[in-house]
Amino acid sequence: MLKRSVFGCAMFLMLFLTERAAGQNFHAWTPTPPMGWNSWDCFGPTVVEAEVKANADYMAAHLKSFGWEYIVVDIRWYVDNDKSHGYNEKDPSFVMDAYGRFLPSPVRFPSAANGAGFKPLADYIHGKGLKFGIHLMRGIPREAVRRNTPVLGSQVRAADICSSDHLCAWLKDMLTVVEGRDGAQAYYNSLFKLYASWGVDFVKIDDLSAPYYHQGELEMIRKAIDQSGRPIVLSTSPGETPLANREHIAAHANMWRIVNDLWDNWKQLKEEFEVCQRWSSLCGDGHFPDCDMLPLGHIGLRAERGNDRMSGLTQTEQVTLMTLFSIVRSPLMFGGHLPDNDAFTLSLLTNQSLLQINQHSRNNRQLFDHEGWIAWTADDAQSGDKYLALFNTRDAQQTGGGGVGDSCEMRVDLKDLGITTPCLITDVWTGKAVGSFDACFTRSVPPHGSACFRLTTQAIKQ
Image (cartoon, rainbow, N blue to C red; front, side, top):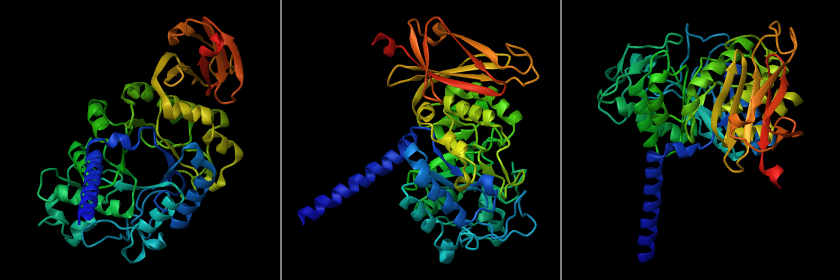
């Protein structure tokens, strides 16, 4: 009897401490920027189970050892008959339970049949040593209101907790859940209890950050996750999240979008530089400004935008994208169909030195922007080394350091990085030593291109 009592007390204490940690320290659930795959750039709202599994298989085989771990099913997984290049809003066939909660479409996710939800798929992904995520729309489904479904854990129904204020302009599925109404928190609690039972590790919630910042719903979501009994990483979308709410979003989410959807064109990628500068001070352990997905590799198979294609960014621009996302410590969510990766695309995702910057650097900041010649720097907290990333965002027709269309010679005074002794500089992308430098460092960078370096002073002393 005594042993059983001691065992019971120990189990109770363990559960109590787990729940307390979940409620008070959600930033600890992802101390480094999340790295994973998301179905949006490939399949829009039409991804099917076999495609999700194929990407999970590839990640487990080729990327897991480099830190990639999340497999995320994006928007409208609860619609049987959605379409590419937009959404089926004419006659969508929604799958929903008796409490107004969307369920995965068994037509697209056969393992979800008979009310199993996403648990079988999550189990499959967990079996690969990976983590599983889903996309949500903020609010409660219009379909739930139409069906007059009850709200689990309350005495009210769907229509009692919603309003038509601040509705999503680009998808009409949802109504706003009004903070403070009887049953409002219960509805979100019921959602995340369900997702926790499936084994969900990550949620991306759309129409939450912009154009209207839904503070009340964000706080209800935070509370519901904390009470769910499972550490579920929270990502908000789309952006730009209002800067005026920067402290609030950092206190309630693990990552939040700072741009609208990023696609595979230079114009949008160039715009990221200014936005990253605005948000750099908010990056910290467990909370990360999100530059959006990586539109690389084979995308557009059945996407919202564009046709079946390899990324429209040049290889030079793709290296620039990865360098920027790494030096600013953005989450890395790959958008391409992983099984179709070529050797170049795979090389972008498996450069251990670059990923080290993304995952473990500190004090990330822009050093200068001289009319499109941009430098960022960061610290390696473990070794004391410095990182330096150089970007030439000018177009080829602009005059660079050597003439029209040529690379520019970019100069950095090492004292601006806090380096006052000779240092050894290594190219992060190639791993090759560039040489020993003091006082200043110059490097040629092509239009739309970048370069990234590790600066080590200790090696010179030794």
